[in-house]
Length: 371
Picture 1 (spheres, rainbow, N blue to C red):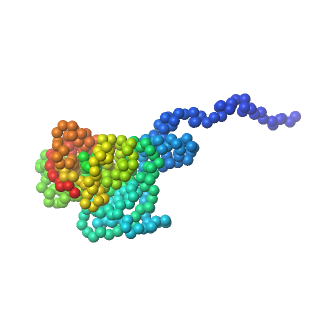
Picture 2 (picture 1 turned 180 degrees about the horizontal axis):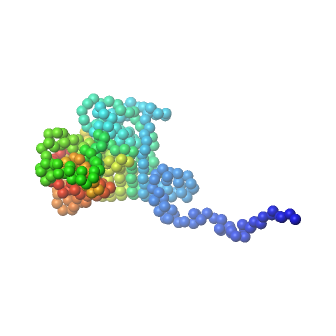
Picture 3 (picture 1 turned 135 degrees about the horizontal axis):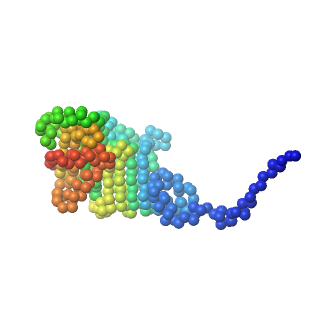
């Protein structure tokens, strides 16, 4: 007797009505879709969402939180580039990563239309570094978004060149000009057992142990190096600030703007009131016309030849520089705001601990002219 191989299948029509066959995603309200898209935030992913459906195409431009990651540049040496001689990038330095890395300058050219020239701050003949960049800039991409409130832009690398092993981090707060800046630096970081760290600390001179800057700091180039770090970081910050002007102008809904880099070296921030000030007050360009002028400022420098941190981490030549424009005063809410800004400037427990420890060191006051 042969067995039947017939199979019985349920009729789909019995279990699913026409209403059940409707796309359930379409039942979600627009405000909920916008919450999801804001969580996504990445501008490239949102760009792909534009092509999903007509509904997405109408909702994506309404996203308020955006993240733009810049990870490459295209030079005029590539296909389709003109190489206009009037739009070249110059660097007045013999090293490609000296005071401020050429890489940041290249990346900044993708944020806005290329400027005519971008100059360094050290001596030497001007020379072309790379021809103009030709690539879709965030300015062009952001034109698709009409209600941007929180914008974060990430460059692929830090802009201040340093020797290998050197620690350098900065964070700057701007309105129409510099309001606050904090710089954390060190010549080397290492991890040592507690006994080794104790030996290093005990080997320091009494003058070094009590928080005073040793005489050797002034004679062996230590102070000069910190000045270079400070000036380079301020130039990098003011260049970023200047190159954001078109984005701020075209997006009046902005409430928060952050420009950082993948290395975590430098961060520029602008909040709602600072963005408002930027729009209302004329921008003061520097003599080079490629960055915002840095105002005359007061600097508080704190230094430790060796800073021992929890977990056996140590920083050699640890330095903290806090900068505020001259004439802003050091009392009241301004001082409290600065203290909060400095304390929360850097992410990561190691850097927070370093700032906290350096704030307890003796303070040295310096003055700097605008440039």
